[in-house]
Image (cartoon, rainbow, N blue to C red):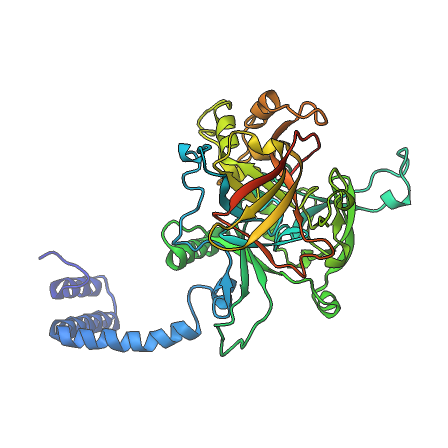
Length: 485
């Protein structure tokens, strides 16, 4: 048996060699001591039977479980805490999306059957990932929780010597942001958590506020990044990726909260409008700006309910009795509707490649997605009534105009990657149908909620839900236009 560090012959051989090399007796004794320790350990392991091993494992588990509960090796996320007192709005993970068969021919017009609502979506933060819901309350501003927030960048002021520039333009200006400038906003997920009366936490008690949890992909360098990667796999499954998150209030903060959290009011430009809104940029992790590739200071604004924006294009409250539209951070109108038959027809007109194999309705960021209508039929609708066939619930909507499209639908909602030409090319070539928007492609229509005269959404509880049938009360060729982000 050759000499080794673990066998008796090896230890003795090494010790003898050390003595021949004029090592001290103390060195020889140390080598013999190491051997005796190894021999005793081997003997103990040999005598260690299965029952003893099981008892050892149980003891270790009983010791470490409470330790892991008090000091979890995987970081506790905000969603884990909110789950004790809140419920998350949206289709449950076990329930598949109502758009899973959006390319199917079943969405075409069926003789004798009215169109109906196929899918509903809200976008609490403008241009971020939406939330698919089964049912949503309708307010003057559109769907409840829709486009409460928007990201914005602070641009440097133009030189004072520029013509037409006054004092108002001499300070930095905030401008709203969409996927047109930052396509990776498509990967920013938003979870809406609302209080659940049936849940109470011993630590938190009753929590009555609703919150948005905003998540985006992020992994640090080095060992910290490896830990984040492992934590994501263990806590959320094999396909999960590391994320960073932050939280925003749904309700508009009180004055004391504004002061305590360091929020501030500022003017923000939304297209041609300028609105005064609350900047909550102190809540944004610095990593988000780096992930999005923002080149300027990044802020996130909450619309002030007392200073909501007015509808300034096309349909006005005086033109439609019972219609009192107001806006959060929608572009020009409270709601957007898209027919699946229209999208499917457009899909046949785009140039397909590896990055554009088929259209997804989510590219167009609609609130209401309709099935069972003819292609582009919604263009001619003027007043529609949505009614639940099994209940008395209904909701009336006034169609204001077609929706003109910019290049935002070129961004893939699954990846945040912008296609070079489609579907913008096909829209401009085949859907240049509105005289007031030359050279612009149109798809879908914009709507305003209608409530009984002398009432508002605070007095009338109105809902739209999946499956509602659509009755066309009035139709006409529409000319007015606007965009939707």
